[in-house]
Length: 441
Ligand code: UDX
Image (cartoon, rainbow, N blue to C red):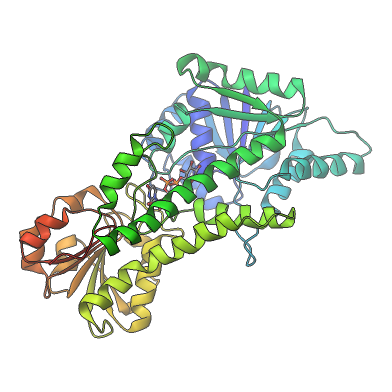
């Protein structure tokens, strides 16, 4: 089938590359000339394992190309994915201007009836809005609407986005016509033949809500275990053992029960906020999600409290921060909890020595001289009064308690991502605040 993807950012590019991989002819469109230029040269402009290989294979075989020309992108396509950004407005609601522009583009340039698929995370009822926009555009030309609107939310995680898209837990397709369902079924047929997974065919609004509910639930799971972590710290219980034992209950499951610095990234913070907003617009106060957010804010402040507890004043200290990406295996710093930690330290006048294996270029101009960017974890830690882990990069696990004890000026470790074994650190004479554990040392 002929597939167009409007917006080749993280979600769009992964969608384009995997659609090409399963045998479709794909054209990616973006208004950002430099992004398209980079892709034309075969270069993925962000860090996502496996995507570069997939893009190169698709380009070499001619099954994927990119353009900034809307007419070129939308002539003769069966399916158009809308994968544009939905940045949050000041009041927490998502800004859907780009989604509307994408719909207008389809209306203007599509040369035959197509299925317009919303893939961007959008509020429930956006499908209806897209249909309305397409209808108005058609009416203004004296025509009636010929395009179908479908909601096909993605559940990809950064760092495993290619795998999540090629081998999903489920495919959700919301459409309001049998014909659109038929087209989507044909689109996914090659993928379903290679990887059997539930295919949930539903109406547009239900599909939109599945996305909201899934992300909000996962964020709530994280906040729940972070709240439990606070109780563990106060009582001497061990949050990891609690989570492991809870996870053995098939009804609960172990995933997304890792206590830590709270959730960040381009999805959870924005999606939870948007869901609260949407619910409120619909007359429902989603207090549970407001609490999820409050606990997440508290989780991001946790390291500062621990530093104060162990160091007293922190404004005159040097603190090593390990990791700034919102999670390992990505260079993405959008809404990364580490940013809140560093902002708070910088506001105190603390000197910060920061290391991250891949994300440092994205913070190069953010704090000026208050934050020293370091080429290695050792460089960050040497001479610092304390070290704080903000992203659980595997390479940090390899640092030994003896190395930390030798490099640090004061023997203080704040392990916000449970990178190290607190007992082993304490045995080396270090004072340790590890999330969900009583203070050791
Ligand atoms: C998420 C959803 O998982 C995905 O389905 C959706 O499509 C987009 O948003 P992503 O943002 O890539 O994906 O990251 P994810 O792996 O879900 O982690 C989000 C945040 O939660 C990270 O900051 C991570 O560190 C944190 N997290 C995750 C925890 O603190 N504890 C956990 O147990 C799991």
